[in-house]
Image (cartoon, rainbow, N blue to C red; front, side):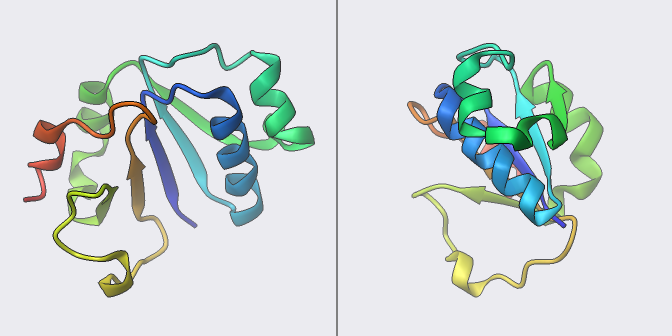
Length: 117
């Protein structure tokens, strides 16, 4: 359904919970390194419950690596940020869209968001 992208996630339980949501919505979870944890940590598996082994997971070595492989979908990138110019209520989402979230501590890099602004 969707592509959920976590850029440099730092908190294992958050990622585990999002992984569980991805399984239940038939969405792909993209993790962009550097990660603040190992994807083998028990906290991730605990938050993901019995779903973690069923997550459609793609791990990218860097934001540049992710962009190089997905830039053709740039028009369907949607950034979760307080700096957005448009509310998500005003968007007509489509299957395959990329919902992109920054790290819990730093958010998304401004240069990355400028790709759409």
